[in-house]
Amino acid sequence: MRVRRLDPILVDRIAAGEVIERPASAVKELVENALDAGALRIDVAIEAGGRRLIRVIDDGCGMSAEDLELAVERHATSKIPDGDLTAIATLGFRGEALPSIAAVADLTIDARVLGAEVGAQIRVEAGEKRGLKASNWPRGARVEARDLFAATPARLKFLKSERAETAAVADVVKRLAMANPAVRFSFAADIGAGFDYPACGAGEEGRARRVAQALGADFAANSIALRAEREGFSLEGLAGLPTFHRANALMQYVYVNGRPVRDRLFSGAIRAAYLDFLSHDRHPALALFLECDPRVVDVNVHPAKAEVRFSDPGRARGLVVGALKEALAAALHRSADTPTRAALDVLAARARAATGSGGAFSSFGAPPRSWPLDWNLRSSPSAPAGFAEAPQARFDVGPPSADSRPAVAPLPAAAVETPLGAARAQLHETYIVAQTRDGLVIVDQHAAHERLVYEKLKAQREAEGVARQLLLVPRVVELDATRLDALLSAEAELAALGLSFEPFGPGAALVRETPAALGDIDVGRLIEDVADLLAEEGDSRGLTRRLDALLARVACHHSVRAGRRLTAEEMNALLREMERTPGAGQCNHGRPTYVELKLGDIEKLFGRS
Image (cartoon, rainbow, N blue to C red; front, side):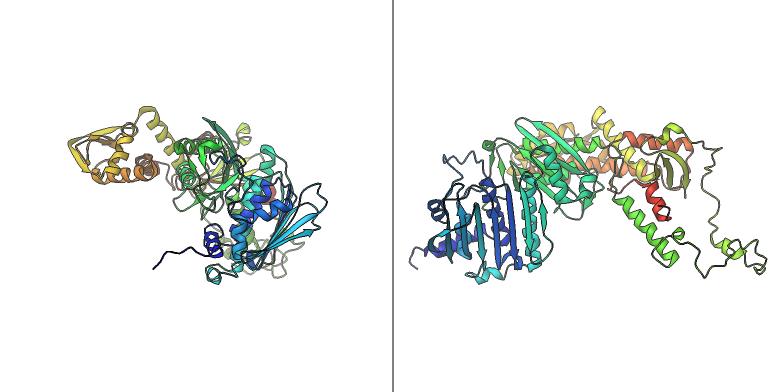
């Protein structure tokens, strides 16, 4: 077959597929253009998930008629004034967004520069310009894209339902809004709920308010502020408490120089920072904002600008991991309030079931009509013989598992003012009940002590180093060149973790020592696993994970077990140590170690307030 040039419109449609994958992609490009134009208010509206209509209105600097006509041409942009691709200071810069949208939709743009006597309008249908017209648009720009993918019906088959596409567009607008708290954002759709985020001002305080608007009051109440700097990188944001976790990573928002990104480097860093606190199938919620010199990050590696590449990825990753770990350590015993709300919901449901209605016992002015008027059946002269004893046997739960009388365990006044309060009883030889100044705390003694033992073992390892065992017969492990190079590049770091080896000819390593804590292991499998991780991610987390997993297992087996009776002194000592220990709000598996019930919430259950 002969080589021929493709039709220009067909070229545009092919190129549009790289940039405009779905309606959310088009909205992202248009909103980024509005932000680069200096807009302080951006309104987004869609119909039918964005397929029928996408409308973005902003109050930015607008465009003249000449700029408007050129803006719909491929590779035309105002975002690179000096042509330097190594210092991109804007969100959109490729010059492909508007022509790509115009290639797969009917595009109409109204724009007006501030101070101009009249605005201008241009329309592009299926990639063909229809010419300029005068417009009475007052300021900024209005962009409307109708019948998306009408010219490429095959693309329509790959779109999801209208509700799913609407949710994707809403997520895009929300992510951009979080990075620009000084701008007012509104989103409206014919399916699903819209939102309107008033401007919150610039700076860290404004960003915190915008995050609360976008992610909700629950996230704001269950997150930790963080701030860190290292070698030209600065990081700010909010990290969710480990017990405030999710089933997927959709509630993770990461930004580089104000650009929302989904990058494996950050995903791995977040997993590493929360490794000690979460189960492998749970994900934290957070919002991180990384700022750096534009020259050390390449934002031109992905057509949709969703990924970035750093000149020194280890520096960026190290900052994220270190800042998150430091913030989680500073939180000490703090836990999310979601277990508390779940406990209150269960108690309220039990109360409704017991009363057969929507309120608690004391919410009624009188007892239910089916109850005898004389509640004290023992003293009732009309009660038949033996009738008074049966109901009492039903509530007989046996003797208490610990004596909590004041004479035996006096209430320490100072302990009541502490975060976890003073121990008052041990129930079922498993749960510690403590009284605080304004409520009570229920502690799972085994889960709490498991975390305390684990943190002690890690601190001991850091202080004394990793014990190692010398192999009687050094083991030769064969590896391909890529994995061997990765392994040798981390030789010193792995030696500090107890794994000592040296090159042994081409394509092999000679292992002499392994971590003693791992015991009798398959040395070849260990080396291969560590080499695979080093080749893929460039660090030695594989061995660290195995050592941490072993310490967690030791902590589980050597902690206070459920079923052991504790004295008042032992319970209070456990509570005080929890308050001093990082991560004590959750066990090694990510489950909460305690639930706190405020007195006001308890009074509501009984209809007292």
